[in-house]
Image (tube, rainbow, N blue to C red; front, side):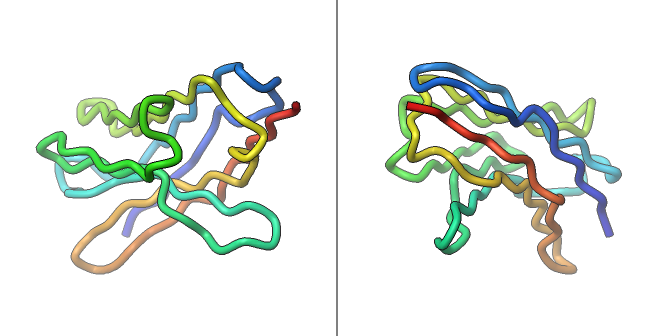
Length: 115
């Protein structure tokens, strides 16, 4: 089992930047895939980006070129650098850790982008 704690959310104007962090209670070397999902009001949770232990990344089309996912295996921390933010990026952002025993989620951090 793994506990995930997100931080870094907040209110930002359109065009601004935020950096989300996700600290894990389990060594990242034991976790193959980690990632970020988001859920806007009235919408389903959707994939934002994932990164494997080997560094292979995957992004939803709407954030490509604006968001960068990275992982620090030594610090057991996942990051999401978000640039050129848009109002449609407003959502609760959740950290995911995918283990053989199942998927584990953080509690979420709110990101609000004002126009």
